View 1 (cartoon, rainbow, N blue to C red):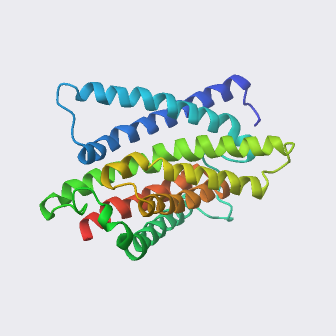
View 2: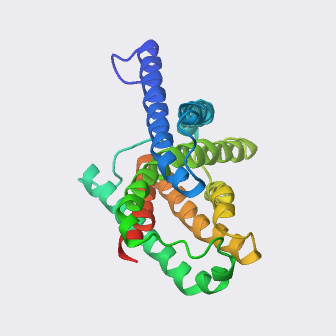
Length: 262
Protein backbone atom coordinates (compact mmCIF):
# COMPACT_ATOMS: atom_id res chain seq x y z
CA UNK A 1 0.00 0.00 0.00
CA UNK A 2 1.39 3.42 -0.88
CA UNK A 3 1.65 6.22 1.64
CA UNK A 4 -1.65 7.97 2.25
CA UNK A 5 -3.73 5.22 0.63
CA UNK A 6 -6.46 3.71 2.78
CA UNK A 7 -8.22 0.36 2.29
CA UNK A 8 -11.46 2.20 1.48
CA UNK A 9 -9.65 4.16 -1.26
CA UNK A 10 -8.31 0.94 -2.76
CA UNK A 11 -11.82 -0.50 -2.79
CA UNK A 12 -13.14 2.56 -4.59
CA UNK A 13 -10.37 2.30 -7.16
CA UNK A 14 -11.18 -1.36 -7.66
CA UNK A 15 -14.85 -0.58 -8.19
CA UNK A 16 -13.97 2.06 -10.72
CA UNK A 17 -11.74 -0.38 -12.59
CA UNK A 18 -14.51 -2.98 -12.53
CA UNK A 19 -17.12 -0.59 -13.90
CA UNK A 20 -14.76 0.82 -16.54
CA UNK A 21 -13.77 -2.61 -17.82
CA UNK A 22 -17.36 -3.86 -17.74
CA UNK A 23 -18.51 -0.82 -19.70
CA UNK A 24 -15.72 -1.31 -22.24
CA UNK A 25 -16.71 -4.94 -22.66
CA UNK A 26 -20.35 -4.03 -23.28
CA UNK A 27 -19.36 -1.39 -25.83
CA UNK A 28 -17.59 -4.21 -27.66
CA UNK A 29 -20.78 -6.29 -27.53
CA UNK A 30 -22.78 -3.47 -29.12
CA UNK A 31 -20.07 -2.95 -31.72
CA UNK A 32 -20.09 -6.55 -32.93
CA UNK A 33 -23.85 -6.85 -33.41
CA UNK A 34 -23.95 -5.27 -36.91
CA UNK A 35 -21.22 -7.67 -38.02
CA UNK A 36 -23.09 -10.65 -36.60
CA UNK A 37 -26.37 -9.56 -38.17
CA UNK A 38 -24.66 -9.11 -41.54
CA UNK A 39 -23.73 -12.80 -41.40
CA UNK A 40 -26.88 -14.28 -39.90
CA UNK A 41 -29.53 -11.81 -41.05
CA UNK A 42 -30.91 -8.71 -39.36
CA UNK A 43 -33.77 -9.25 -36.87
CA UNK A 44 -37.11 -7.66 -37.63
CA UNK A 45 -37.32 -4.03 -36.49
CA UNK A 46 -39.96 -4.92 -33.89
CA UNK A 47 -37.69 -7.38 -32.07
CA UNK A 48 -34.31 -5.70 -32.66
CA UNK A 49 -34.35 -3.80 -29.33
CA UNK A 50 -35.12 -7.04 -27.47
CA UNK A 51 -32.25 -8.82 -29.21
CA UNK A 52 -29.86 -6.02 -28.28
CA UNK A 53 -31.00 -5.94 -24.65
CA UNK A 54 -30.72 -9.72 -24.38
CA UNK A 55 -27.18 -9.61 -25.77
CA UNK A 56 -26.21 -6.89 -23.30
CA UNK A 57 -27.72 -8.67 -20.29
CA UNK A 58 -26.16 -12.03 -21.14
CA UNK A 59 -22.75 -10.54 -21.80
CA UNK A 60 -22.91 -8.24 -18.77
CA UNK A 61 -23.00 -11.35 -16.59
CA UNK A 62 -20.15 -13.08 -18.43
CA UNK A 63 -17.94 -10.01 -18.76
CA UNK A 64 -18.67 -8.98 -15.17
CA UNK A 65 -17.54 -12.36 -13.88
CA UNK A 66 -14.42 -12.27 -16.06
CA UNK A 67 -13.49 -8.77 -14.89
CA UNK A 68 -14.04 -9.77 -11.26
CA UNK A 69 -11.77 -12.79 -11.69
CA UNK A 70 -9.10 -10.72 -13.39
CA UNK A 71 -9.10 -7.93 -10.82
CA UNK A 72 -9.16 -10.22 -7.78
CA UNK A 73 -6.99 -13.15 -8.85
CA UNK A 74 -4.75 -11.60 -11.49
CA UNK A 75 -2.46 -9.61 -9.16
CA UNK A 76 -1.85 -12.74 -7.07
CA UNK A 77 -0.13 -14.39 -10.05
CA UNK A 78 1.41 -11.28 -11.58
CA UNK A 79 -1.27 -10.66 -14.23
CA UNK A 80 -2.53 -7.09 -14.48
CA UNK A 81 -4.53 -4.74 -16.66
CA UNK A 82 -1.48 -2.54 -17.17
CA UNK A 83 1.96 -2.13 -15.70
CA UNK A 84 5.03 -0.01 -16.38
CA UNK A 85 7.18 -0.84 -19.38
CA UNK A 86 9.94 -3.33 -18.60
CA UNK A 87 12.48 -1.40 -20.70
CA UNK A 88 13.98 1.59 -18.81
CA UNK A 89 12.86 4.86 -20.35
CA UNK A 90 10.32 3.15 -22.59
CA UNK A 91 7.04 4.99 -23.11
CA UNK A 92 3.52 3.61 -23.14
CA UNK A 93 3.19 4.68 -26.77
CA UNK A 94 6.26 2.65 -27.75
CA UNK A 95 5.17 -0.33 -25.67
CA UNK A 96 1.69 -0.53 -27.09
CA UNK A 97 2.92 0.42 -30.55
CA UNK A 98 5.03 -2.74 -30.52
CA UNK A 99 1.98 -4.70 -29.37
CA UNK A 100 0.05 -3.32 -32.34
CA UNK A 101 2.82 -4.40 -34.70
CA UNK A 102 2.71 -7.88 -33.18
CA UNK A 103 -1.02 -7.96 -33.80
CA UNK A 104 -0.57 -6.88 -37.42
CA UNK A 105 2.03 -9.62 -37.87
CA UNK A 106 -0.38 -12.18 -36.42
CA UNK A 107 -3.08 -11.02 -38.82
CA UNK A 108 -0.73 -11.28 -41.81
CA UNK A 109 0.39 -14.77 -40.78
CA UNK A 110 -3.22 -15.90 -40.37
CA UNK A 111 -4.12 -14.53 -43.81
CA UNK A 112 -1.12 -16.30 -45.33
CA UNK A 113 -1.88 -19.63 -43.67
CA UNK A 114 -5.50 -19.40 -44.70
CA UNK A 115 -4.68 -18.61 -48.32
CA UNK A 116 -1.84 -21.10 -48.77
CA UNK A 117 -2.87 -23.99 -46.54
CA UNK A 118 -6.56 -23.98 -45.67
CA UNK A 119 -8.32 -22.32 -48.63
CA UNK A 120 -7.69 -25.30 -50.94
CA UNK A 121 -9.01 -27.65 -48.25
CA UNK A 122 -12.20 -25.84 -47.28
CA UNK A 123 -13.30 -24.26 -50.58
CA UNK A 124 -15.93 -26.94 -51.22
CA UNK A 125 -17.34 -26.56 -47.70
CA UNK A 126 -18.36 -22.91 -48.05
CA UNK A 127 -22.12 -22.52 -47.66
CA UNK A 128 -23.77 -20.47 -50.38
CA UNK A 129 -20.63 -19.82 -52.40
CA UNK A 130 -17.50 -17.87 -51.67
CA UNK A 131 -17.72 -15.47 -48.77
CA UNK A 132 -16.43 -12.35 -50.56
CA UNK A 133 -18.14 -8.99 -50.33
CA UNK A 134 -19.30 -7.46 -53.58
CA UNK A 135 -17.26 -4.37 -54.54
CA UNK A 136 -20.15 -2.02 -53.80
CA UNK A 137 -20.64 -3.58 -50.36
CA UNK A 138 -17.00 -3.67 -49.26
CA UNK A 139 -17.14 -0.30 -47.53
CA UNK A 140 -20.03 -1.35 -45.30
CA UNK A 141 -18.48 -4.77 -44.69
CA UNK A 142 -15.18 -3.17 -43.69
CA UNK A 143 -17.02 -0.76 -41.37
CA UNK A 144 -18.79 -3.68 -39.71
CA UNK A 145 -15.41 -5.43 -39.47
CA UNK A 146 -13.85 -2.44 -37.74
CA UNK A 147 -16.65 -2.47 -35.18
CA UNK A 148 -16.22 -6.22 -34.73
CA UNK A 149 -12.51 -5.62 -34.09
CA UNK A 150 -13.49 -3.66 -30.98
CA UNK A 151 -15.31 -6.72 -29.71
CA UNK A 152 -12.30 -8.94 -30.38
CA UNK A 153 -9.79 -6.54 -28.92
CA UNK A 154 -11.76 -5.63 -25.81
CA UNK A 155 -14.57 -8.04 -24.98
CA UNK A 156 -12.89 -11.27 -26.08
CA UNK A 157 -9.71 -10.33 -24.24
CA UNK A 158 -11.68 -9.63 -21.08
CA UNK A 159 -13.43 -12.99 -21.34
CA UNK A 160 -10.64 -15.24 -22.58
CA UNK A 161 -7.49 -13.70 -21.16
CA UNK A 162 -8.49 -11.56 -18.18
CA UNK A 163 -11.11 -14.04 -17.03
CA UNK A 164 -10.37 -17.57 -18.20
CA UNK A 165 -6.58 -17.47 -18.54
CA UNK A 166 -6.26 -15.74 -15.17
CA UNK A 167 -8.47 -18.34 -13.50
CA UNK A 168 -6.49 -21.23 -15.02
CA UNK A 169 -3.17 -19.65 -14.03
CA UNK A 170 -4.41 -19.05 -10.49
CA UNK A 171 -5.62 -22.64 -10.14
CA UNK A 172 -2.26 -23.97 -11.32
CA UNK A 173 -0.44 -21.60 -8.98
CA UNK A 174 -2.57 -22.80 -6.07
CA UNK A 175 -1.99 -26.46 -6.92
CA UNK A 176 1.77 -25.89 -6.87
CA UNK A 177 1.67 -24.40 -3.41
CA UNK A 178 1.54 -20.70 -4.24
CA UNK A 179 5.13 -20.12 -5.37
CA UNK A 180 6.58 -16.60 -5.30
CA UNK A 181 6.16 -16.26 -9.08
CA UNK A 182 3.84 -17.91 -11.58
CA UNK A 183 5.79 -20.87 -13.02
CA UNK A 184 6.37 -20.77 -16.77
CA UNK A 185 4.77 -24.19 -17.22
CA UNK A 186 1.58 -23.09 -15.50
CA UNK A 187 1.46 -19.91 -17.56
CA UNK A 188 1.91 -21.77 -20.84
CA UNK A 189 -0.69 -24.39 -19.91
CA UNK A 190 -3.19 -21.63 -19.15
CA UNK A 191 -2.31 -19.80 -22.39
CA UNK A 192 -2.77 -22.94 -24.51
CA UNK A 193 -6.03 -24.04 -22.89
CA UNK A 194 -7.50 -20.54 -23.22
CA UNK A 195 -6.34 -20.41 -26.86
CA UNK A 196 -8.04 -23.72 -27.69
CA UNK A 197 -11.26 -22.58 -26.05
CA UNK A 198 -10.93 -19.27 -27.91
CA UNK A 199 -10.81 -21.25 -31.15
CA UNK A 200 -13.80 -23.36 -30.17
CA UNK A 201 -15.71 -20.19 -29.35
CA UNK A 202 -15.76 -19.40 -33.08
CA UNK A 203 -17.74 -22.57 -33.85
CA UNK A 204 -21.17 -20.87 -34.13
CA UNK A 205 -19.93 -18.32 -36.68
CA UNK A 206 -17.99 -20.99 -38.55
CA UNK A 207 -21.10 -23.15 -38.75
CA UNK A 208 -23.03 -20.33 -40.43
CA UNK A 209 -20.41 -20.04 -43.17
CA UNK A 210 -19.10 -23.59 -43.68
CA UNK A 211 -20.05 -27.22 -43.52
CA UNK A 212 -18.27 -28.51 -40.42
CA UNK A 213 -15.76 -30.80 -42.11
CA UNK A 214 -12.50 -31.86 -40.37
CA UNK A 215 -10.58 -29.36 -42.50
CA UNK A 216 -12.95 -26.55 -41.52
CA UNK A 217 -12.62 -27.42 -37.84
CA UNK A 218 -8.84 -27.58 -38.13
CA UNK A 219 -8.83 -24.19 -39.82
CA UNK A 220 -10.98 -22.71 -37.07
CA UNK A 221 -8.79 -24.06 -34.26
CA UNK A 222 -5.40 -23.34 -35.83
CA UNK A 223 -6.05 -19.82 -37.10
CA UNK A 224 -7.88 -18.61 -34.01
CA UNK A 225 -5.68 -20.58 -31.64
CA UNK A 226 -2.56 -18.97 -33.09
CA UNK A 227 -3.88 -15.55 -32.19
CA UNK A 228 -4.96 -16.79 -28.78
CA UNK A 229 -1.45 -18.02 -27.97
CA UNK A 230 0.18 -14.75 -28.96
CA UNK A 231 -2.36 -12.59 -27.13
CA UNK A 232 -2.08 -14.80 -24.04
CA UNK A 233 1.70 -14.49 -24.10
CA UNK A 234 1.42 -10.70 -24.30
CA UNK A 235 -0.95 -10.68 -21.33
CA UNK A 236 1.44 -12.82 -19.30
CA UNK A 237 4.67 -11.06 -20.19
CA UNK A 238 3.33 -7.50 -20.40
CA UNK A 239 -0.28 -6.72 -19.52
CA UNK A 240 -3.88 -7.00 -20.64
CA UNK A 241 -3.78 -3.73 -22.57
CA UNK A 242 -0.95 -5.12 -24.72
CA UNK A 243 -3.08 -8.17 -25.54
CA UNK A 244 -6.06 -5.93 -26.32
CA UNK A 245 -4.07 -3.68 -28.63
CA UNK A 246 -2.54 -6.64 -30.47
CA UNK A 247 -5.90 -8.41 -30.83
CA UNK A 248 -7.57 -5.26 -32.16
CA UNK A 249 -4.75 -4.66 -34.67
CA UNK A 250 -4.85 -8.27 -35.86
CA UNK A 251 -8.61 -8.14 -36.32
CA UNK A 252 -8.33 -4.91 -38.31
CA UNK A 253 -6.05 -6.76 -40.73
CA UNK A 254 -8.50 -9.67 -41.01
CA UNK A 255 -11.83 -7.84 -41.03
CA UNK A 256 -10.96 -4.49 -42.60
CA UNK A 257 -7.82 -4.55 -44.74
CA UNK A 258 -8.47 -7.96 -46.27
CA UNK A 259 -12.04 -6.97 -47.12
CA UNK A 260 -10.90 -3.77 -48.81
CA UNK A 261 -7.93 -5.27 -50.67
CA UNK A 262 -9.12 -8.72 -51.77
